Image (tube, rainbow, N blue to C red):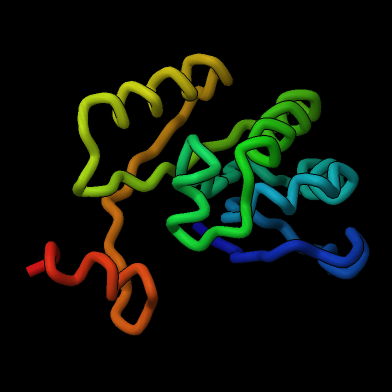
Amino acid sequence: MKILLIYPPQSSEAFLPENFEPLALEILASTVKHPNLFNNWKDIGLDNLTIGFEAVENNKLKELNKANRIEINQQAVQILNDLHINFSSYFLIDPDFEKEDFQNILNYIDRLNLIRPRFVILTPLPGTELYELKKIKLI
């Protein structure tokens, strides 16, 4: 399986080389604001899209130092559904989560009718601000 990591493009032409046949893409939700790009990729074989939503509340995204917002995730879902592009959505699970946090994620998944949610345990990387905040709990 080929996996291409991309970030928000400037134009669809810049990221659509001749004879390019992606099977899977991992993207930021903000990239989906370029629906023509995704329509082009669908036309050449896009069949597995993964989006990192990370969290279901703007304050949690801010804590994670993410430039994303819940509204952007919701727009991405709408655009991809309109284009009939299947996707998986990734959420970060903080070891400090309580029952309410898990319920919030499940409610969000239900509300947006997300078909393939995926969950990843939050593992702060050394050298990051988040690592410094969480390191006492990591060991």
